[in-house]
Image (cartoon, rainbow, N blue to C red; front, side, top):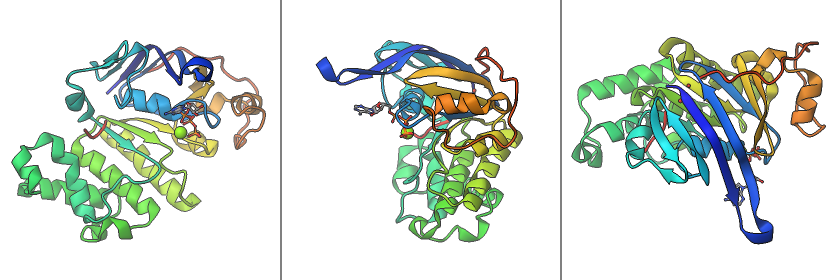
Length: 277
Ligand SMILES: Nc1ncnc2c1ncn2[C@@H]1O[C@H](COP(=O)(O)OP(=O)(O)OP(=O)(O)O)[C@@H](O)[C@H]1O
Ligand SMILES: [Mg+2]
C-alpha cells in the first residue's frame, strides 16, 4: 500500500500553550518501500504515525493509504475501520494481549475480517489456524504458539506482532519505535523480519527508529523530522554526520557507519502502509 500525505498540519494545546507539532507536511511513500522515520525526541514521529493510522484527526490536510482516504481536513474517513484493516501498527510495547496465547494473538489479526460471532467466541476455521501457524513459523516462533504472550521476551513479542500483521494480510506496517526497548541482537532480529516481509510479501514499512544504524542497515530511504517538518527525505546512505547532527539538534544519537561526503539534498518524495481496527 502506498502512503500519500498532503499539507498535514496539527497542533496541541490552546492559547499560550498552543503548539504546532506537524507543519504543512507532505510526503509520498510507494508500495513496497521500507522507510525509516527519524528525528529527535518531540520531533513529531509518533504524531505523524498516529495520523497515518487514522488514530488522530489533523487540523488540516489529507492522508491516503493504498488509495483510500484516512482523513481529510480534520475528519477521519467514515470507513476508517475498513481502511485500518489493511494496516498493522507495531508500538514499542504492549502489542499483544498478555493473557492470551501467542497463537490466539496472531489469530486476532483476522478479527476485522471475520463475522463477529466467530470473533466473539474466537472460533476460527482450520485455514485460519493454519495461517497463524505458518506465520509464527516464519518469524521463528513456531514452538511458542501455545505459550501465554506475557511470557515471551520483548523481541519475541515484536516478532509475534509481525506474524499477526502477516495473518491480517496487512499491506502496510507502521512501526513506532518497535525495537527501542530491545537488546541489540533482538532488535536486529526484529528488523530482519520486518525487512523480510517487506521484501517477500511487498509490505510497505514505515518505521520510526532512534538508532540510526538500523536505518542504515535496513531502510534504503529515510525521512527525518524536526519541529514537525520534513528536514530530510532521501537515501539513508547519503545522510552525512553533519546532517545527522542537525537532525538531532547538535547531538547525534549515532554516527553513520559509512560517512558519505556528498549528502543528497532533501529529495522528491518516493511512495507505501497496515493497522488493526
Ligand atoms: N496529547 C498531546 N498533548 C499535547 N502535546 C502533545 C501530545 N502528544 C504529543 N505532544 C507533543 O507533540 C510533540 C511531538 O510529539 P511526538 O510524540 O510525536 O514526538 P516523537 O518524535 O515521537 O518523540 P519521541 O522520540 O520522544 O517518541 C512533542 O512536543 C509532544 O510533547
Ligand atoms: Mg514517539
